[in-house]
Image 1 (spheres, one colour):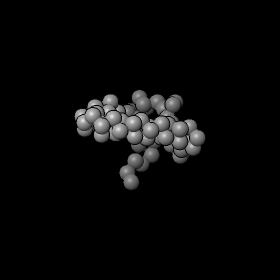
Image 2 (cartoon, helix red, strand yellow; image 1 turned 90 degrees about the vertical axis):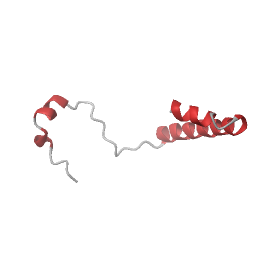
Image 3 (cartoon, one colour; image 1 turned 180 degrees about the vertical axis):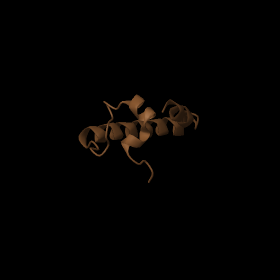
Image 4 (cartoon, rainbow, N blue to C red; image 1 turned 45 degrees about the vertical axis):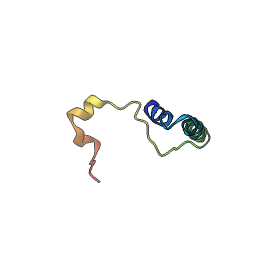
Length: 65
């Protein structure tokens, strides 16, 4: 994100500042949309035991699509 901000600023004085403002607005819209309309389809593996998966990945199912 910081790299993209540096690239936007290298556009020039006027267009760089306008691009930064648009980029910050885009980040705010994304942040608030995630707060208001969260995506419930994304599963968070908080209690996932990665050591068991490394030892036996077949026990977790087929991962081929």
